[in-house]
Length: 293
Image (tube, rainbow, N blue to C red; front, top):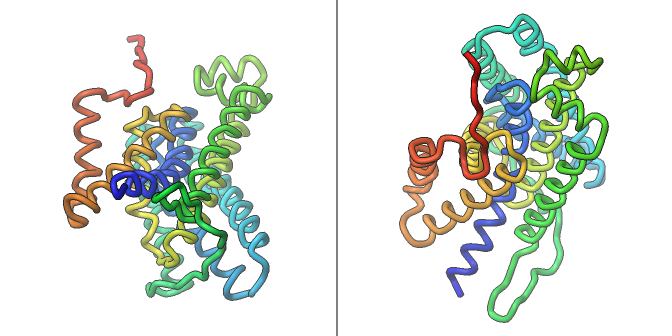
């Protein structure tokens, strides 16, 4: 029974990785950019929740909504300020990557300046009875994480496949030049993608704060890296792939903690990345892309 408990716990933390990985996959699918600043958007969302809930002592729903809106707007602003000119002028990918790392360092140092480097404690946000299935007990935070992640993935799939902006996103992803000729505003589409990805990171931040009630300015670094591994594992650019990768990574982490050693958790996570890149570089649900030369 302990094994199944670890599986469920792994799905709980994996749900957070999955939500963050969705942001990586969406941005990469549109502009082929690995946005390493994305992990720090989680940190930004967590501090917004802290300010609204603890400092201002406002209701929880306002803290959650404020975090999602703030991060969504922050994602659009970061795209416009840091990436837009590089994308417009078709800058080398290495320039975009270096800029993303620069934005990440900037956000970490900005929040250390604003809030200090000490960890802040968060109050328990969502409290309801755990689910009892025979001898197996599923905590409220794990239930919430899994339910929200599935709901977000389904909503995102509907957005991408059924809405007008979703069609614009798919067209821009396939061929940005042709999309422009068809009258699609690719700049707006890219900005919208960054906004949605950052809003999903804010949802992940809320779930993370509820599961692990402590935040600090450097928290987004490792979270972002693990979510990136999840995105690569599932197939970066694939929405179901990001979810699958997050769940697998969470379960692997939980089982490593329980049966091997907590000191080896990160080694196992990045070991999975190396194996995937060697065996199936496109990921579990990724598609091979042919380049014309």
